[in-house]
Image (tube, rainbow, N blue to C red):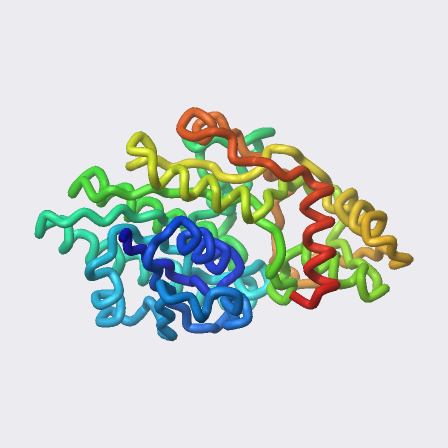
Length: 327
């Protein structure tokens, strides 16, 4: 039986990944400090005989050593979460993103030196592209981050360092690593508490409250259902050609944030109004946003079958249904 470790496994994406790994027959260890994750995300699998849950932080070197030992695969998803948190706590963002990656890579290297292979997936983000002005972003594009005086860019910069570390270990030590850059992953169990736009809109629409759109609402995003993203991650981890690569993961169907808000109101059958709020009022005067974020998915589709099965309407309906069920 294959053994898999999921860091951040009580989070939104991590909990869906843990479910999928159990469903395919793995023995799964989930580690989470429950700082932004929630035990409720694991309620459907907590009693599963092949699940082991560890409450702790992957900033703890001794714990990481214990966790990585004996695993066949590691999925490193633990990280700082959400624009709101990142804007408020840039020091924690940097530390929580970089240090655990160092620890996991160090333990994977020890295993490798003993002749034991542990394939590791590192969850990165479209944030690393920063303010790159291209219409679509491919994996070899330049990273155009904002000034260091703008804390908002600390997240993308720290995740870029994670990528550099992982890829350096592949080149220098032949550690089998895969880096996946997630673009706006959404679905049931995602919280709006950390600034995530779709659950925030859905929660407001279902409650009959105003949907608050930041700035002018013309920012462009692409939303992918978490089930499709998990399918991509699992497929890539089974593909030898993906090792040592950075791969965009998400949907490439763009929508404006205002258009998203309007569609949520329509599909929820809500009478909620749409209002606008400046970034200064939402975050602070130093906040900068990315106007357009659309991935080029050629590399992903060259490695695995197209994992995207959900269109935007089906995603929104799924999130609305989950919200009304209280999950």
